[in-house]
Image (cartoon, rainbow, N blue to C red; front, side, top):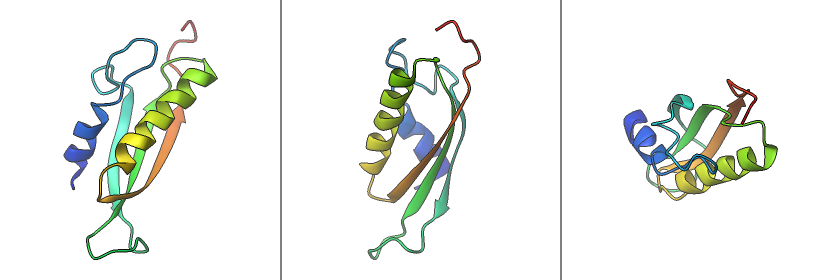
Length: 94
């Protein structure tokens, strides 16, 4: 698993209000992997670190998006944990 693979997986995650993927909306500020030496199993496992601009000030919509990202990435065998940092929205009108 590589950082570009991680970004490709994030294309399956959609903003709940705009219904476009978060990569094409440029909401992903950074996405990288670090090895997780404490993860069980014989294959290398990783922690996914995602820094994301919140698409809205609506806490429920942002929580839904975070859950969607975590569920998508935890479905990938090489991912053991997901850490999401949510940055403030660029515009507070949504």
